[in-house]
Image 1 (tube, one colour):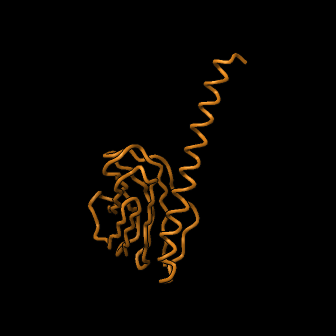
Image 2 (tube, one colour):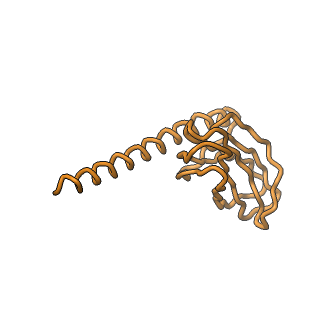
Image 3 (spheres, rainbow, N blue to C red):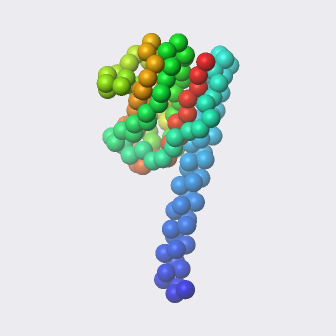
Length: 140
């Protein structure tokens, strides 16, 4: 392989490894945050959503929720994001009332739906450069 192509390939691998490391760190941070809700009887759902957040470019995740259950949606981003927020919307796109928690690059919202069905969780990084994030939810 030519040295130039080898250098490009190595740089691409280094970028990928850094992104994977950021995603793993974000997941560890969000699991730490969600652990607080487990003290109140909440169980962490298997699975997670992760990716990149750009400031001012919201990410939406659709979830199916059940009336009568209680949910905590928890998100963590890497420290490059200065502030992250989380909101929940019903299937018509109307915001629903939540109990919020925010601590810089970690945020959470508690929600108890009165109607079963699809809901949307919105994540927004308010400032800072692109940052890896991880979202999970807990239920009881």
